[in-house]
Amino acid sequence: MKSLKSERGSSTVLISLFLLALVVFAAASIVSSASELRLARRNAETNKIYYSLDAEGKRFLYKVKSAVRKSLDSSGGEPELFYRLLENSLDQDIIYRKNPDGLTITAERTIILRVDSYDRHLDIKVLISAPDRGSTVNDICLVTEWKMWNEPFEYENTVDLWEGNP
Image (cartoon, rainbow, N blue to C red):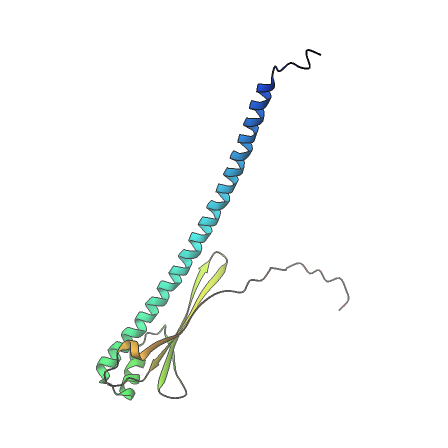
């Protein structure tokens, strides 16, 4: 009976349990930190892509507005001369079309950024209206669309699982 009531080794068992709990919490902390690091890197890459596309869109908008400014300065406010000069001064990579009303032009561009195995797109449309006396570039140019989108995702289904007769 005396050996059953002995308290020898109980402190060793307590210390062992305490160390085991510390090791489990340390491992959980390391796994959690690693997953948060992966998430932060993925978030940083997404932000980098977003701002790269946004910067390209701003460059396109700058090209359009500088062409409008040149045409506006040279035309003296006459719409016919303005549109002729504008069509000549727009870059080759800018798609433009006259709207059916004949008083506006739409300049548009789709910017594509390839990331790993998928594409990110930015669609931009700028409506350019006829100038009046005293019009500024910001009065004439109106951004009607600024849309970022991803390419639709599809599974690669190369295995034909059809077993029936067509």
